[in-house]
Image (tube, rainbow, N blue to C red; front, side, top):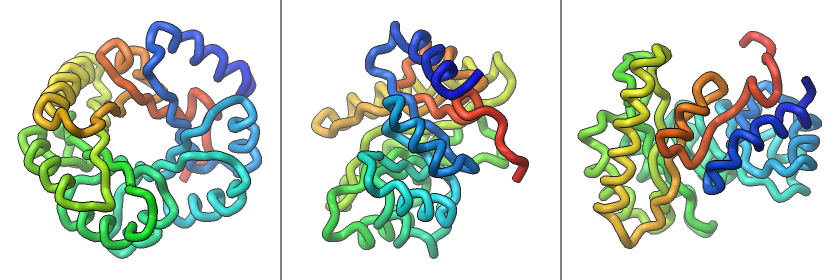
Amino acid sequence: MDLPQRLLAIQEQLRPYPAARVLAVSKKVSAERLREAHALGLRHFGENYLQEAQAKITALADLDLCWHFIGRIQRNKTRDIARHFDWVESVDREILLARLDQERAGLPPLQILLEVAASGEENKGGIAPDQVIALARTVLRYPNLRLRGLMALVHPDPQEAVSNFRQMARLFQRLQAEFPEQAIDTLSMGTSGDYPQALAHGATEIRLGTVLFGARPKE
């Protein structure tokens, strides 16, 4: 199955969820294939690795793309992340907020998602669920940042994943209630293996890589 067929199948599944957005996870995918994806209507692309992403952002500068940084953030990379991306989805520390805000000065506000450690796995990043509201308040202190919502990677076990999805939906609703003046509209959860369940539990953004582009070369 090629990219147009894969995308059509996903769009059919999205019909009951008109507010949901596909974030095409494009690590290890060439700029040429991303140009094809753009021609098919995709606009939002998520990158994990800064150096790889910068090359593609430059190569595709003629297109109306929205770039999301979704990987782990090293403090010495915040300048380039802040200057080249539109969204950052993996924020879990105040020091990152301070650095991103400083480096974003003079540009439109950077859209921020707080990454939540929903699954409790030590090998995944994110803040504890009970720390989300406090960190969200911190975002509001920075003029060059805009809080848009939450992101999470859930547990690989299907039953645990459902529990994580439910928890994230509740936390997202609490965040919206706590900050009604903010445009908190993005709950990013669900990947190629579990996005139908994520949509059923209120995801407004699903991060799709393999199901769109096929298997990638091993890292």
